Image (cartoon, rainbow over all chains, first blue to last red; front, side, top):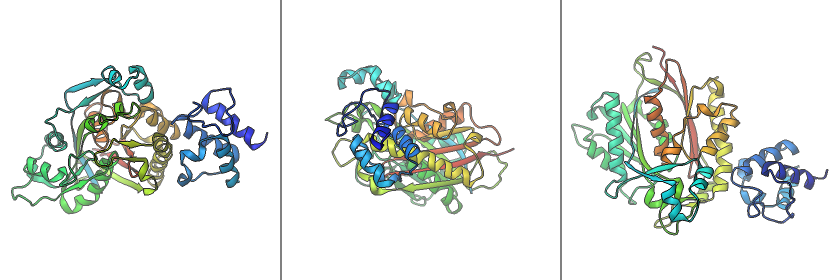
Length: 77
Length: 320
């Protein structure tokens, strides 16, 4: 699995949805993430990619879409 | 360090149900309960003020402690919903309580810290009691006029309620005297997120809920864990967690992060909503009355709020 597929699997897991959002689609507006699924997703991203996301980087807009998440995660790897 | 002698609380009598608010907010009453865990809240009467509610909570606290107002050496008053820019409610509360035989002898300090203000007040009192003796910490919030300010947001307006809490903290004289000893505390602030939860003058409350929950769900377990580790304790050894009552889902999440049964997190949010900085002391006042601490019990306070300010405070009931 490439990074985008790994992220998509996490989004599906924390949102309990099977659909695939478009890479640039807002995960908040499309109902994949709410305020409480977001911290779950961050925990899963840290575990999956073996990184520690500092609190100072925890701005919801960084995790708005699959593409933004991928860009951020790859910047930390 | 210092000890907690007593708690007190005041809640307005008017109960506002989700059904009453749902009609005004064009949403379902059940939706409010699902997203917040809140079923009803209390709204103060128009003539009630932050100061008058604070006085009522303070009087109950002094009554529970069995001491006279004249024996209080300092008061700290937390509120993020004060009716005016200045003066804050502290001096008015001190005046109404007639704290000292010599008027003006007791310093009365305002802490304009929403949500976490009572925790900061307790921590400051733990240090200042060595100088000032009995320190009365009061948190009073009249959130309803703010929550109902137009344009109302259905994600914000139903969350808040009104109320006040108080806590008396004194210097430790006799560790076996029956008071709860304050073992340690940790306080944190990070202004990088100041815009994410704020109340500007004459404006509705502005809240980036995603940011607040994201940060709180990380920082609260981290602060509690830091405090417990520093004191050689585990989360499982804590009898009860008394948190700022912001959101039931958040409290459940903090419990899971600490690997603790959620039942150990005392909750009254279903009945009172989020009373900002007053909520933690109202919860403590209720829990202390029933079931209350047994000898040797560890109690952990924690709060997170606008600023962001957050922290935790660890207490142990004396072994008599």
